[in-house]
Image 1: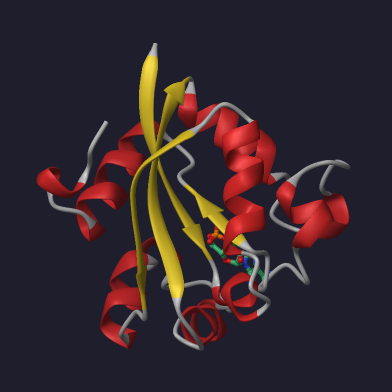
Image 2: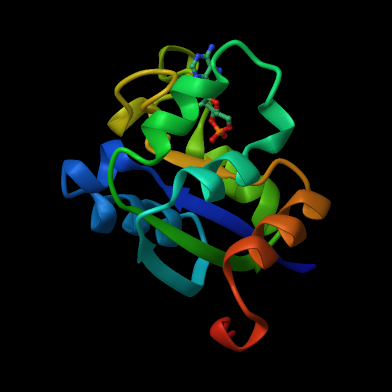
Length: 139
Ligand code: CMP
């Protein structure tokens, strides 16, 4: 079934001018970019987005990193888009990611890991709504 999932191209990637390289890998994996915008998150926005990780020891660093530069937020559409996106991203820690995945090929570290992708369809819907109005998504 056709699904939508949410992706962020993180500050380590925009800093290294890899927006196109990441998007190319997403597209090659069969995902279609149906919404995209480059933003610089505020601290409040980043804290709200990562609220589920609030109690984690890395929360403060994660928020600082995510506001250290611009990001590109995207809605990806395709057959099994959520799982497909997680597959092409690779493991959270690039050291554990499979060859050919975005994180193995491009990420710098577990924190500067180039991309975020929703981990469930329910979270995808919440995350999409956090950054996009319905009319900004053009399928
Ligand atoms: P993401 O998919 O954006 O969701 C939470 C993020 O926290 C994750 O990607 C990592 O970038 C980051 N993260 C997870 N574990 C650690 C860790 N041990 N130290 C620093 N950052 C982490």
